[in-house]
Image 1 (tube, protein in one colour):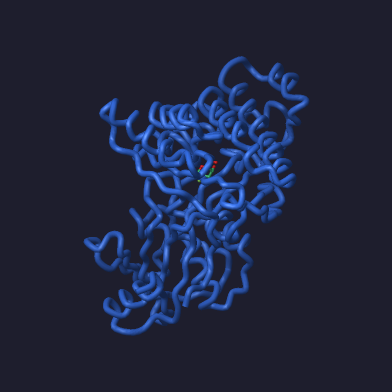
Image 2 (cartoon, helix red, strand yellow):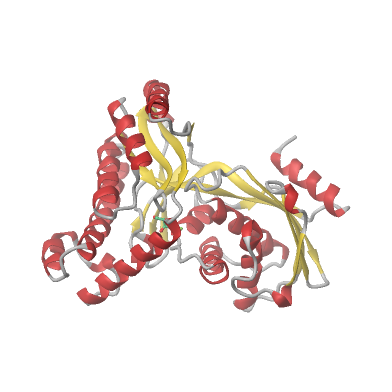
Length: 385
Ligand code: GAF
């Protein structure tokens, strides 16, 4: 049975009728460009083959019914559309509810629906499982209610849903990746204009793999620390008199740093400015067909997240250091930080050895065994059936 058939069947068994369709949206890993999104900067995600799927059918009585195959014990959540308000729904149901709320807030005439969700995007691993849920639901609603929204518009709407309804001050990286990525490609994003460009990212043709290693840790203070980094960047931009840190050119970095108070704001600024520059360097190499050459830039990016942005942790540092020592061309933490996953670019022949080395290093410290898989760029959000 395909995954589309599985959610269709689940929908039918639960709601006693066929859905009107099945949609899916992927998780992501970001190749480079971390925390640059809310600084109006650049980033380069790929979609994972892992995705959230939703079988859906419209309802006319204003009652939104939600069920997740990942949380069967929670049963069906019923919410009246007119009662939807920011921060009133907890847990996984907040994400689909948030999307319906955001559509209505934006003035779209959408009604309720029965939704049956499922997902194989690992949760809490920094791989955008929540954005995948949001984008799957937004894509389903876009079709069912014939809204005609473009993928970037859907991404913006999902970001608003997460910021205002769920209460997470994220940027647009995850939603844009989930909505706009294309198979076999990385997605270059300019977060200010929302201009995107599909960049061929054919790892196999270069004899390479992109390993994703989920450390299986998520440190508890992550949400507060993310918000704090964001406020720090905004404060630094204000003190420098620019709209966002994206407007500080790398050539003018030293001069900009000298105008900031000593300490945290300087290192936050240094990470963002150098990270934007790293995305541009990676883009230049990819445009020249040199996928292998991006490795060292990934590792530099990790050092910047560790030393300047201070969002790494012992587990991600150990995974990155071990992967590089075991022969990876480059490695870095991916996503918001404080745990989650790392990526490692490697020759195909070295992949198993790298995974084994990281696993052994974790075992030697008595840490939970990390989970590894290889990521091939998958498609963005779409209708399956
Ligand atoms: C998280 C956020 F949701 C994104 O918007 C982005 O800021 C990312 O962390 C860091 O690049 O995934």
